[in-house]
Amino acid sequence: MIFTDQYSASRTYATLAILGLLALLCIALACCLGSVSLSLAELLTALSELVRGEPSSMSATLFELRLHRALAGFVTGGTLALAGVLMQALLRNPLAEPYVLGVSGGAAVGALLAMLLCSVAWIIDVAAFAGAALVASLLFMLAYNDFKGSGSSQGTVTTLLLTGVIVGSGCMAIISLILSISPDGQLRSMVFWLIGDLSGAELRYVPWVIMLTVLAYCMKLARVINVAALYSDGASTLGISVGRLRKILFFCAALLTASAVSNAGSIGFVGLVMPHACRFAWGPDHRLLIPASCIAGGSFVVLADALARTIAAPQQLPVGVITALIGVPLFLVQLHQQRRHYLP
Amino acid sequence: MQLQVTNLSLAIGSKPLIHHLDWRVNPGECWCIIGRNGAGKTTLLRSLAGLNELPRAAGDIAINCQRLRNWSLLELAKVRSYLAQGRNDVFAYPAIETVMAARHPYNDGNYWESSEDVAMAQAALAELDVADLAHRDVRSLSGGERQRVAIAALLAQDAELMLLDEPTNSLDLAHQVSVMQLFSERCTKHKKSVLVVSHDLNLAYGMATHALLMMDDGQWITGQVAEVMNEANLSRCLGYPIEQIQHGDRTLFLPLHSIS
Image (cartoon, rainbow over all chains, first blue to last red):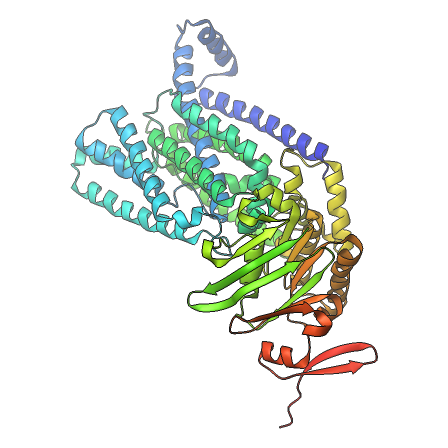
């Protein structure tokens, strides 16, 4: 198999086209599923009513509600998966995920404080975003050595990783404190927020803008990210400013994590499992990996959320439960497969 | 391509590695750098590669009469290449991807590799006798195979100045000889310059035209291999008595055999 430019490029575009189609199918499926299931015909009529701007029938209303929730799920999953790829490239560690550096911990602290003190929805989201931004800035200041690019010859950005883990643990301690002192009435919503819950999500444009902008930017950088992933610090002898690239990756990953977590809480496993699954299926080339993880992550959360709504009907489970329940065995199977594949 | 070092002083903490080094490397010269463990060979090489930032007072390193710090990273990558002492592979890239990535200084504007790049990468792998490993996961290669893939990547980078930190690590005897011959040819035929850090005195003597000996106290000796590499200098440099033996027209260096 000779990798020529035509092969790599056409393979990438074909794979992305198929993934895009599958994503649309997942969203359609999520709109069909529910306590009142819609058939495909009903779905199409609802869609046409929505497009014409007159959602009158019950199926159209249902469709609209479910579509908003599915889109919110898609953007959250895509954002988390993308953040996962960037985090793994930044830390040069395939076990990294968006929450490892404590940015989501900061968001959780912000969100829970806001829930404790006042319960207005948009204030909670802003507070979550602010908490994430604060932790990210703190990390940037404390680990600035790793952003200079000429650090250890192993290239493992240890200062950043350790600082992030410690700060994350600190945030967990504060979260435990808040949970222990909050009144019972608020406790349930706090816990649901922590596990990850899409039931309160509305159709918002900001998460889409953030995700698509970062996606486009990182796809442009994908080649450089490949070289840096291969050579780490040595990539500077190939003409890449490693320190600058690390800053960009950190900023993008932190922004994405903040966006996803303030939207829907800390939905786990998407950021770890989806990049892995895509890497296992299509290789570590970031030119395909970055967009593929994004689409796959979005589809995964859409499906998981559809399951969360229907599996224990009429009770709604938080989507983070389903992603964990699917993610853990999926990850273990993959890990086992990879070891078998890799050992000669 | 000319490398000019002026008054360079390097230290780790309070330990001096090299004092006021004045050195020039011209095209077609093959230098071997010899010293004990911890003498500062890798630090020197990394500083020459531009990986270590030098404090202003520590001297100057210039390539083609332009200070290292004034070079743009991409332009510098086209002129000098660096082979690190070890490798740390984390992701499952195929070996050929490693080699093609080394073409980055020339491909910065392209998103996808061209078939010429692929052909060049294949040729580089073939030269190092690892062409059949092109699509293997780099992490699954043996030490020697991985080393040869790394050398192939360095060759694909096609730079005028090549800085090699122990290139024959993990290589078997046949490949040690062929790799050294490969670089020696690059110097004589293609007028490239090579700086090699090596612990193998005989291999180094065989391929190099010049030598830099780094003594343990920061002192140094530079010059042509025949003048500089003798018993006295090498024994002082390596901290062990070395014996020089003539075998026909070959010169060999052996540690003095102690009769106990």
